[in-house]
Image (tube, rainbow, N blue to C red):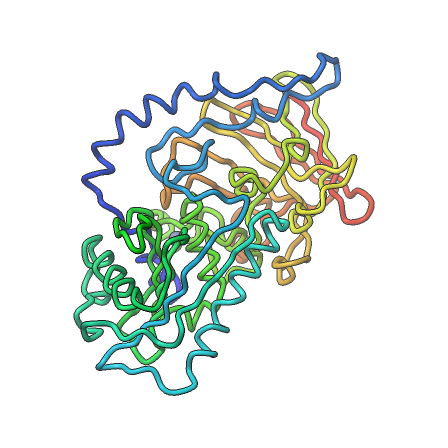
Length: 409
Ligand SMILES: [Zn+2]
């Protein structure tokens, strides 16, 4: 359970004053986005499901959340992401000779994750500093252990950029990654900001992640988690544990998504996250039409990058203006190799719930079991009734690792 305590500080450090000012305007505008979505030219048919666009819940929070589109401050998730990777050390914690390779290797698996899970739609182009960059101040000048503010964080990032600037070209950089030497254990954790405000080589830099000592516990997937924030994804673990389940910061999604638990058994991104980021085609999403029976044949989420005719990745059942129930198929493939239970993973998405407050909640097929959400997927032959609409979802085994799901209103 120690990891729960350690994960809590990993939230986006941001300027709260700026965000507060923007709230009213952003929510007002976002409330109208549903009508602005392009209509899909699908001919009307008795059996055709609704257009996938009908299931894109409009964002109803300011900042990171689970609606469409992702937060306006998110970087494009399709195309090339150009990252400046600065390895920094300090006069009180100089990096030992030969330690650069180890530092570089530790985070490389996060880049691999992003490229694989995106199905190749995101290409991460990393340019590393030429050796260790010496920070202008000792590590103790940056209060990671004493309550890091937005100002402290951007000062740390700004110092790293200034120290590297003479030998590093920032003119074409989207995101700055600052990785501290393993010696500086007091640079404890790895926060993200999407509100940097530093200009270098004529480029206004807005996005950064700083990697601290916890990267040695999480491994490279911490880079993929934090980059999720850079791209606009919310945290799916809970900033406050539920009163009825004290200490369980993972009561919402357990280990079923990288934005929920980096060390989880199934850290593939949820299908919904892939859709938010543009890593799923609308053709891979079956949107249930109200009052109609809807069926889908779901391929494993880990294979969403290889769409196949007649196979879907998600079934979405909207239950209100801001909420939907999603069904996807989780099998022990890709980053899901360690899952304890396979089958239909059912979760609710609420576009009105902000990051860290449970915008996604997994439905446990075995509530009360000692395994928590590890055994949440529904096995073939089972069913579940959605409590607000009364729709019944039934799950059957399909060929080649697929799950056949039927929704009956
Ligand atoms: Zn996070």
